[in-house]
Each structure stands twice: as structure tokens, then as C-alpha cells.
Length: 416
Image (cartoon, rainbow, N blue to C red; front, side, top):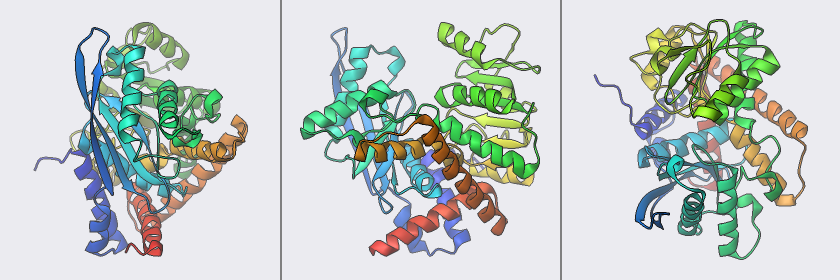
């Protein structure tokens, strides 16, 4: 039987299983298995060479029962409606999992920003917001950066929204530059939140993090910061790192600082001195203590799950593990920290940024990270305890908690 790899169908399958375990009736599943609203837009843009190009953009607004919807904007050549819908669903469960008063959304544009000039990037960002201005807002839906978007792109988007609305609205976008109402700690939040979860999971299974061997698949913002945090704060040893072009391995350890320099100079982790080049497939199957998928979805599947050779999987990426792989990992006693717990540090600090923007008073980085630690640690405990209660894997524990919280909000509103 062919394994299902369509992201949205996977999210629906996971939801169905959580509903079944929780004893929800089919009407509840039917109320939650599609977005509240899905918007598709066409963006016309004159390129620097004078040509006219058309881009397709999306915004999926999944559920607003617990508060304004929240979710990043991805710019990627392989972006799709299915993936955006799935990510908006996972964002709904993510905000509920860490118990912040937000719903879930996600956006995307099919493009390759790596080939575009600053002018083209700004034009595309502003065009996207003009198309969606009626559907977003500080109390409706709050976008943020994601794959191949950054604080500067968020600044352009916020500025365009404020021009349209003719008023300041700093909380319409998060992940902004600090001078425009961004939050201290936001850049490292996803990796920092994941590190807090890894710390708790290590206690859970009796793993000493001092010298623990770590493999990181994906060396973008989350993966690169995770490498530095785990090395500097917990004295872990990074033995493998990869990006879209391939991976590097050294059993004696890799200095993340040198990898960052290599990546900046050559746009790849490949070529680092004293490191063996390996494929992403080989990297995922390296023997290690902690494996961190920090790139894209569906990298751990039925085909390779049996070969995963680690104690902890910390999912900094969204949707890196398929349902079939989850079952194999659970049977093999691999401790999985599921994505919408492990990488929830980003949206949590985005929520802090919204709060700071509402009353125009900003916290220090120490205050932000202390609050983040409290939220992530509490959420971790709830998830693991719920999984044990139902004798299931951690992802289902997280789903059950999130599902119950969303259902409660919907019932209190009279939606169910």
C-alpha cells in the first residue's frame, strides 16, 4: 500500500485518529477537518528585466475559536495549497497545545526569493498584503515570517497594511525588526523553545546532554540557532548537519560557528574542512542521541523510520514525520517531541510580540526567554502526561490536549 504523503491529508488523518482516541463524534471531526476560510490570490509583478510575471499566493485561516488566527508566510518554489492548509491546521493545534489565546492560519507564495532582487521582494510583499488586507488584522489574523521570509519582509508588509488602513497597527504582523515593534528573543525563539523541550525530554529518558551527539537536518534559522544553543548552553556535540545541497559529518564534532561562516561564503554547508560529505538520507540515519529535523515535511517516512538510530527526535520542522513512521518510532522506543510542541517557541514569542505591541511596552530578552521557558515546560509536561494516560505516542498526546481545548472554545461559543 502506498504511503500517503499529501500534507493536508496527513493532517486530516492525524486529526481523525485524535478524535477517535478522544471519543469525539463524527460531527466534531467534520467541523474541524477543513479551514474556516481559504483565500487564493494572483499577484502580477513587473520584474527588474521588464518582464511581467504572475505569482500565486495563499492564506488558509483554519480556526478562530480561541482567538485571532496566527501563522507564518512561506515563500518557496514548491509551496502548495495542500501544504498551506496542513500548516494552518498544525498551527491551530500548536497555539492550543501551548495554551496561548490564538487560532491557526498560514500563508504562502509560490516563488523563489533567492533569485529575486530587493525591489522585487518588496513589491511582492506589498502586493500580497494589498490582496489580503480585508482578511487580516491585529484582531483577525496575524502573519509572521516563515520559510524564506524575514523581518525586513514583515516590515514591508506591516507598512503596506498601515497605509491601506491609514493608522498604525504594529500587532498586525509579528517577527518585525526591533525598531518597528519587534520582540527581543524572536529570532532565536523557535530553536530556544525546542531546546527547552529537549532539556525536559533528556530528563525524561535519563540522557545526559553533556556530550550528547546531535544531528541537525536543515540549517536555516531554526537549525543554525539550535546548533549554537545546544552547543553553548548544554555542551552537546553536533556530529552532522545538512542543508538542501547535502550534509556533513564528523564523529568528533562540528563547530557550528565554522559552519555558519561556510554557509555565508558558499551558500552551503558542504566543503567544510575536516568534515565528510554525506547525503540527507544518510544523515537522517546516523547513530546519535538527538535527531533534529529542521527543514521541510515528510523526511521521516515508513521507508526510513526503521533505520532511525537516535534516542530523541526533536521536530523543529513542521510535519517531518508521517503517521506510519510515528507508529514505527513508537514501537522502537524513539522519544519524539512532536512539531507543534517542539517548534512552538516561535509562535509563543510572536504572541508576546503582539501583547507588547498592544500596549507599547517592550520586554528585555531575559524576560521574554524566561516566560518562554515557563510556557514550553508546562506544555511539554501536559503532552507527555496525556500520552502516558492514553498509552499512545507524544504526537497523539499533543493532539488530544489541543483538540479538547479547541472543542471547548467552540462549544462555549455555541458553534458545536
